[in-house]
Length: 177
Length: 246
Image 1 (cartoon, one colour):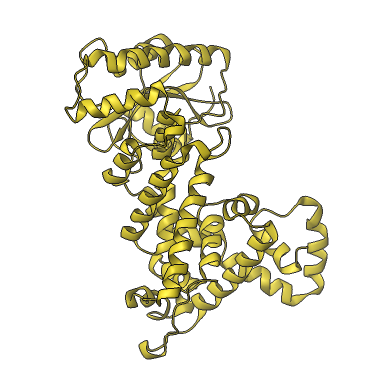
Image 2 (spheres, chains in turn blue, brown):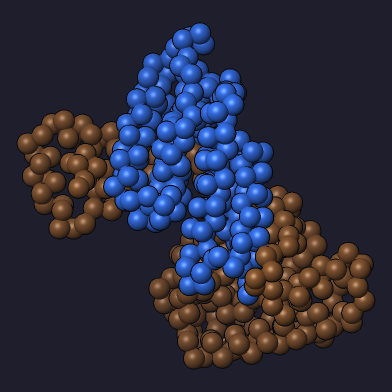
């Protein structure tokens, strides 16, 4: 059984990496998160119920690890990578939404959302989870997921449409919800 | 209770219950602010947000992650003889144990083929296809034989029409640089790639002739093939047509 789960975990890795990247905004940090999630999943493999979705279970583990880290960062004081902020305000936001959104622009906008909202966007908009699946992964009611997603999209829309600003006028990124 | 704005969002996301659509349409007709909300959700739809992330999903998975999944100890609660098989295999790769090489693959490969053959004839549409994840399906859909797909290192080996009148593709999945699985998948009437056989991961290039996992899948392919394998040009045509049902 464990062998089959390992092979299935490998098949989930590309999507789990994309999800982790959306959460962390960094390939390196995302891969660290994926590795930690896989190790935790294997160490608790008896908790996974055959017949349920392995990918959802792994998304949940990765999300919980990341939320714990974000909460710890909030307590310790946040460190914002200034390069993360470039994408949102370094270009004319209207031009960005009128043409193709760039990875940098979306990354930067996501980085400014509260953690739970960012996770909702990553699961539903990027990974294509249904509201119900996202609610199960997050362990909250569907209504909570929908309101997080609606607030997140309103904020993303505002950020991706805002005109260019000077570096000194950039708002600080948020963490936590 | 969903707000009108949340129902507009659900409409954009394709997750609004059909019964709720007429009411929302009526509300949109008399509420310009709700129309503006709808437009806002359209500009932040999954397709628009996801598009830049498509490239992240196609990147090759680093070997360290694959090896972490394959080699990390699992909890004691579910260790099975099959788990011991992988542990033995890894131990052998690391030079810690001495077991006959043929014993590592012959048993599981034979079992995999027997189960696969039974499943293929009894359950022609194995829609559960637990090992056919999205990345594998994407790789089989549009990757030329002999080339690696970007994600999960899936390499289709050959394509053919089966005696059951379905399109099938033999493939390899490489886990990092040291282990490989050999598989066969066929396209269902629903347009999905369903795994017919997939061997457990084994070491690359260490199996004796006649007892390796690739040979087991080769035999299955020979038994199922109803004609010649597709040429590169034929495969390219299939990519364009989306593997039409036979």
